[in-house]
Length: 465
Image (cartoon, rainbow, N blue to C red; front, side, top):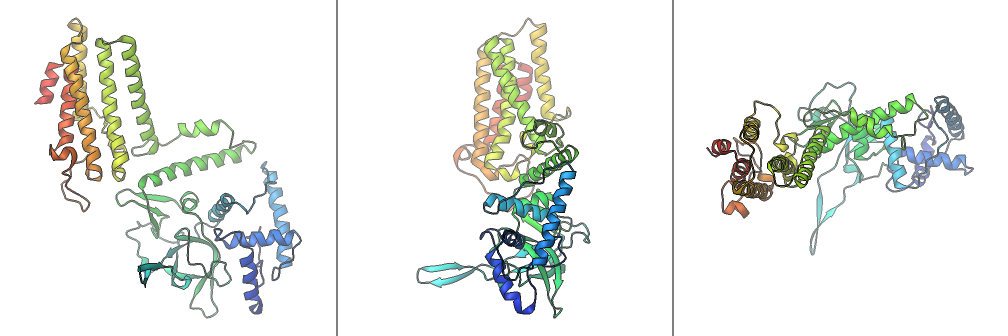
């Protein structure tokens, strides 16, 4: 209702501007609010509650009251509950309200550029000096009229600088919770040499990612570009961008269902939890694909161990152990990268390719065929000493490979590098002090050990060769 007013809530006469700004500052809910709209909302509530505030327009308050009644009636006509009130006293409520403001004003966003950090010399050394408000720079972004571009291709020299209006509660603010601000409109100054932003709000970074323009993930450079122009970008883990994309899709679906069925309780309705999961995007590198693959591998490991307990150390039990060890290998490949080298984490970290033409999959299929043929046509394969030796080799190889990945940390890569990167470091500690390529040796022991465990002499010879 306040946004829809055709007149400002506070007086704008030249002789009353300083007093109006002082009253507006008194209405700021908290130091973390950082929003002109929340200050106006508090002023409206106080004035509507009977408190007479200086410089507040009674006509604007009366028009806002009428708009509130009209909006609530429209909400009820849609079948929604329009009687809920929101408190301005809690940090969580303030974050939600600022997210709502951002969603309504998007893509009216400006980028905040902080000055270089300055230091002051003291007797014991140096201390950092907080920047002043006049040292900050704001650049408006024209998302609607700009051509699509990547964040690297965007020319920041073409961005238009804007300024916070002197009547804003953020005019003297030097610390911002996020490098973006949302504003209602731009206003040219009387001199014509400056453009001011009216009614500014500093949203949280997650509010911008969830309710702002579409997010484009740059996996290689670990950058999240917000919007089509490439002017708004933040450095973050790519998986955050992937998660945000899925959350935005689920939120859109939830809001669509709520509008289609106003009686739907989005907090308790069971369909909210399982139906969107069935509609997730299972493309490569998506969070849904990774979750599904992990679930399947975990199910195979659990089934293999349970079957071993039921059937005992028999030919079938050995086969179950084989599938469990293969699943453990793929799970540890992904988990090691996730914990110790997260910047390289992707779907390929499972080292699992269902393509039949893949050499690894073909070798595994051949070894499995040899075992089944010996089991069906050669009178079965009872486990013997060779099975135990192969099992120990496979466990030792798995332990060596995982230890090598953990020791290498960020220097480990599943893909063979042809060029030296700036972050490459030669690892000479731990298992690398004993063996130059412990991960390859571990994989060799693991692969050959599995074939010996299955008593696949032909496959074991081919794997060793």
